[in-house]
Length: 253
Image (cartoon, rainbow, N blue to C red):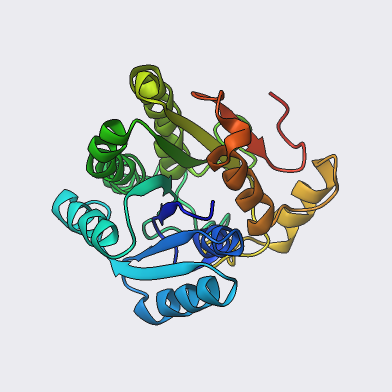
């Protein structure tokens, strides 16, 4: 990883921050993308550098292609060519089993908001980074999904539907860009212990997840970050179009 430049969207907190720090520990240069949390992003960038990597915190709304394009251009000017993109950004979501909207009350606008954040965000990041990857004939794209579309322990309709669409996006992209030595894979996490987004998850739901998970524990951001590192590493050079579930065995596919 040492000479690679990694763009992690939504990296100011939670899973994105854990992924950024994990790459920093491997000596990579990390672009810490954030939307609103400038202070937290600066803290993650400092942690990356303290771990031995290089870092650049950059504000960009992943739903806006021009902002994403400008972020990639700045990253390449200051750190070097972006070789790995991790599409992790999650826009305005809380895993709250009590306050969630059920199938009878959720409006289409909620679906659209998650599709824009998840699918459009990944599309914009790939659209901005892929031309350089194709020119250099090397690239790694890792999308962050969920195990909920395989096992909806709680029916988060809008979030899960958007993440399911990301699987199709991953496979189509992998089929087309593989000829340029670019791999595209997806890491599907489960409930994480603990992020800002999962802070509203009740103890009852957490206990249920633990009880039906073979490892009898809830996975952590560091667990998922390890799988992301694998897909970015030389060991995964012949793997593309795949979805790897990292949830302690709750979903076995």
